[in-house]
Amino acid sequence: MTQIVEEFTTVVPHWKPHVTPVDLDQATPAQLEALQVTPSNRKISDYVLVLAHDVETLKHRSPLFNAIMYNRGGMSRAEREIGAVGASIVNRCIYCAAVHAGRYNQLTKDETAIAKIFADGVDADIGARLSAILRFAVKLSACPPAADANDLATLKDAGLNDEEILDLILSSSLFGWANRLMHTLGEPVAE
Amino acid sequence: MNDIVFRLAGIDPGSHLAEVVAKRADIFELTEKTHDAALTPAEPGGLSHGLRAAIACRIARLNGDQAFVDHFEGLLDGARASSDERKLSDIGFKGSDDRSRSLIRHADMVAANPRAATGADIEALRQAGVAEPDIVRLSELVAFVSYQIRVVAGLRLMRHSA
Image (cartoon, rainbow over all chains, first blue to last red):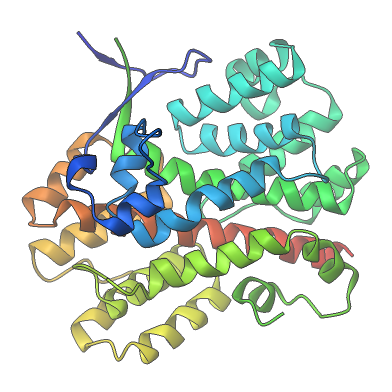
């Protein structure tokens, strides 16, 4: 029996697609190339197999995702995850929030900040720097985007430099994109 | 600096911000490539270039971003969009048949209120005759444009605070 997960959690749910994933045995050469399928790598998630219906955007998605979340320099990987979590809270993407809150916890070996964020949202008592990062990510994720000059000044006051601020803009915007796919093309279920 | 993101964010070549973004040149190149893949793909499937430009224009309006509205209107002209396709760029227009109504309804929700999405929304597209690959193409278009608009919004804040 499966049940849709509706509350934020760090337990990564199973993602059940609403759209039929591309069947690898019937995939076109362009799809196989974008999926980077090789004889030794046929384990592709249902999510990516759903995205393979639009092969031209999928081709750029993985390198772009990796560059924004893992490139050297700039903001720490852990703080980029807070950008991702902020967007995922606004867009209520339970799956993305679980994966990226979990990564933050792994990278920092601390579960208290995420627990507070899941409980209290942008008002979470997580220190000035993390709080400024979360608030900026949440406000940039609104439609229309609502982050303003004060939010940017708060980031600078909290000690972020321009390279870090740019990485925060990129990671929270990237999750505005990812959430809009993950949360609309399928749903998180507990089994 | 001919990149859409830099142009719409108003980043001056030679400025401090131009130096900062240059450190992430790979990301902005991939963003530009994805823009072209979402707006003017070689194989557009059931979503013509004109229809994509019109929907993107609509998303820019929902985000209150006139620079992006102007940009996507330029693409509408470039795609020689039909008058029926052009109508979708107007946020007051809600569609004239099952297919256009369902495409508009879904695009608006994914752009402005994605948290409300459920499996019933995808089923509604299917019922209106939208093929599964086109459901994914529509979703990628709206999701990507939402990303690009936010990157530019953030860069504008950085430019003004410099």
